[in-house]
Image (cartoon, rainbow, N blue to C red; front, side, top):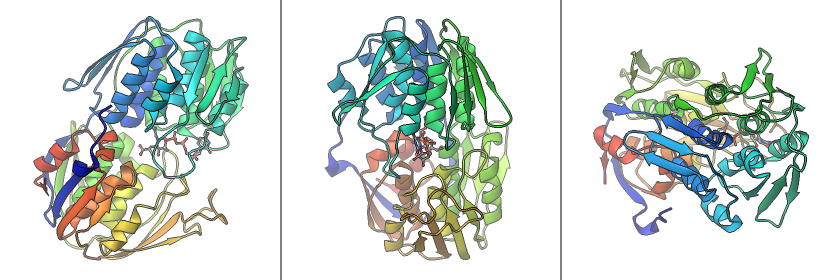
Length: 443
Ligand code: EPZ
């Protein structure tokens, strides 16, 4: 993993120019990494297509190689070939250094228990948008028969002396990661597993599709219950990843904020319908084509909206940060009630310094009280607009907040210096090249 020299981990942006043109969005970051881990379950070769060239893919490739798995990445073709015929335990320290910036390692638990009988999971990284606990993950593994020893602060050691067996598991919250944990650990368990309160995001359903191709027996019922019947063994898969609806929505928000017009090749309507409804309510126009979606600002005022993030099919938590920048340009008061993460508005502070009027509240400013009500989290935001933004020096706080800062710099008049820009490489493939293709004034 190349470490980035902070000196040049900066992007100079001169904003105020509408973004216009066409870009191509490839596979979903929050799916491809999990599909790569799923390949560990089969002593064979798997091929994943439409894979974007992002840091998360590199991290998981390196982690797989650390476990003796052969991984061939063809970045331009977007194809990753994984040969998991042989797997070996990795050196604890190596896993720790490698996985610093990711939460994916916890999903290696189930596959490694099957292949090696044990797993070491380092302390997890990931964006600082909340406490990011893994209690649901560990509960699931214990219920399936694993022994979890929280070792020194470096991480946890997991074993399964008698193998894994099916269990009845209920998630207190439809956690995406915990649902993936259960899927990856239960497909080869002895007997049946019933997971209620599961997440059903499109990325989860694509993981279920991959597991079904491998030979797994999985059903998803109407009441968010996933039933898994353990099978004896699985085989490699070939799969084309679904497009990244978070990246597509990020570019759509950039079109709105900069009065631009962007054709996002690869974007698909079904997974973005909730976003499209809000995009239209704000006053954005979109045109759905077979191969992508065109998003543009038709001129005139943008309208304020009240948004409440939620699990699928609600408005995605990852969609709100880029859209908040567009809402600073809407005429009136908008409200965003973030109900998935307790601390996901940190990115608004630099926006306020640039001239936005955004007030954060501890109250649940939405139709439903959420898990963070009466607790000390500023998880609701009121945005007043339109407010002109001035270029600033900005430090990127996390992946999605960072992209929002990029959009703000492109919307602002005057120069901005966006520092820590390499964090955005984790989830936005070739974003510098795409910005240039859209006519942005950057260097
Ligand atoms: C995944 O994170 C995504 N990351 C996130 O995208 C996304 O925002 C999130 O799902 C929700 O859709 C990846 O897929 C790599 P969760 P995940 O478990 O799985 C609580 C991005 O920018 N929780 O659904 O970690 C947790 O605190 C990232 O691409 C527990 O309490 O999310 C949170 O409040 C950001 N205990 C809620 O569930 C647990 O054991 C949702 O978390 C697990 C989660």
